[in-house]
Length: 329
Ligand code: 13P
Ligand code: SF4
Picture 1: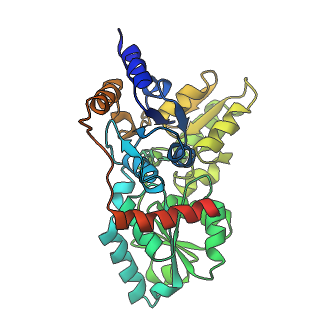
Picture 2: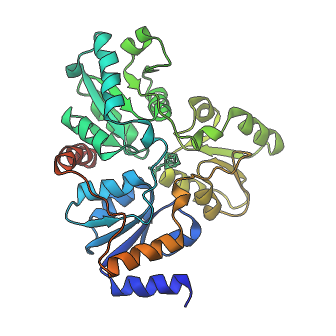
Picture 3: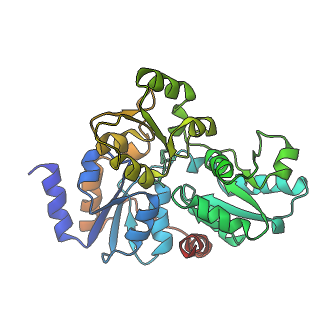
């Protein structure tokens, strides 16, 4: 029996749902029961009927399921941590608040919004302050709702997403640690200085290269890219928005995409290019292998679970407030 057959056999014997993000390797993606972007997966996996959720993705994604459905047993074949999520912890979050306080902005005048790519602890800190979570699919709506509070938005951890949505909404943004403190004080959206190393690979030179080579090509990018790249692109959208946009293109239309390689490559073979000379594969997403999935299923079967997602009760309580606020909006 090959590994895929062994996995399917174990899956049929166990009370488990296998979930995979679009950025997973094809072999892993193909054996999943549910696939999607981070927003779809957080929602769908917390509502499945099985006791076990085997989550193939990065750590914050498995944590989001555990926060929304604490009674479920969430297991990750690899607890790989998203490089961007790793750029912020509660101490860094608090240090940034301190910088804002010293600049004369009181905590009561700040509404934190965290991109879903952050740890449960950061989400809990945001929840404690009355803030909320967003994903790249709903950031526009969440920021718009946040602004109705009349407070300044403190957006963590992805500076690019904060900057891109500020441009989109005609608002002023500034990044703590990059922009001068007077700009930070007058900004509507104050961004934490984090970024995605994969989406930083795409440059305006890459766009110019493709436009020179194929003058009619369409450029589509994720809003985790640098604002200069997003500005030059024809389209910018979250993972599922990019999928929809690309699927609806004329089959003969050339498109170059600035996001993760596995997803782009799986999406459309003909006339589709990735916007980088370096293969833009997310290293942490790619850590999960079929053997890891198999080993995880065996660990469930033998009741010796490895890599279970466990989060302190009080962290779940506040992180859930921030996540549920996002779903309410
Ligand atoms: P989505 O929210 O679009 O699934 O993206 C998550 C992510 O990590 C993008 O790099
Ligand atoms: Fe994190 Fe970037 Fe990988 Fe997305 S692509 S999971 S933001 S490191």
